[in-house]
Length: 365
Image (cartoon, rainbow, N blue to C red; front, side, top):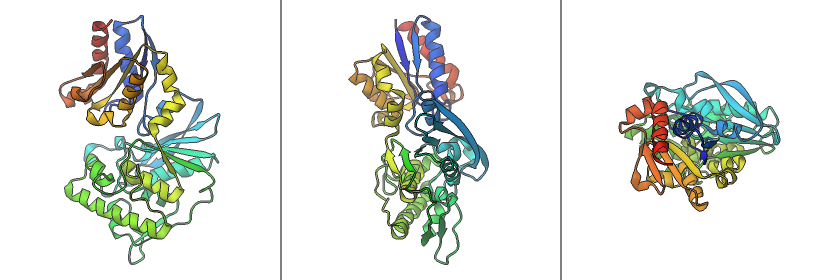
């Protein structure tokens, strides 16, 4: 039996790589005769670098940048040897995983560290920079990213606004002289989020609550992003408010489009193409995937849902392991949750996931 193990991250508990290794350990415990193909997956958020690093020959570099609260952190990026392109995972700078629950600051967290990563990458002179977005602690529309690259955001009195999404409610104009490399280096945003920057499905309404925003703060951030979009249109001549995917990472994707001329691409498709996912799946007998919470949204374009879809097309049986699972959402052979209590599932995800995989394998020859 040849098994493809291709989970995404278990948010807040395990990286995609850690989840894959835990699943393999459990399966191997019960079925040592099976062979395994390990393929951590990502759609551009946390785990993006891990997924690509295992698929292509690349050199890893790191530089000190700032997290969403302005504290120094070490941000890694990849340079692909064959193409020379550079791959950035924005969450290395503005990711939620850098912050404790009591540190969340949805109104003032910003993306300056992402801009610092991009600036460092641009100094290498690549033909293309791929920015994977997702897992962010920010809702600033990418303003911090642009500020790190030289943009200035000014209020009615001409003074520069402080960092974060909320201050954009007072935005009057943007001063922007693009770095010389803009237009010469192609910038690609990798995400599978299709939400626009603003509106009922926008960055603030959909994702800010996950970053600590209450109802009043969501309303404030929505107003700020609406103002931001209007001033972007007026100052830069770029309309980003309704771009599909522009709301990814708190609007960082929209900012990358507006300031760097980026285009948005499916992160899953990019990773699947680079890792030869379909070809590897075609040679296996069983596909095992998983995520922290498998529900109805998982089958609407998310990594786990796309893997289930591809496996179904190829006639491969699929097993999904999840921290929390809704069986009604599963078009899969087996769906199992690692623990009934979400707190336990997060705290003890590694051993519980291994145990669940071992138990499943013992019962399914």
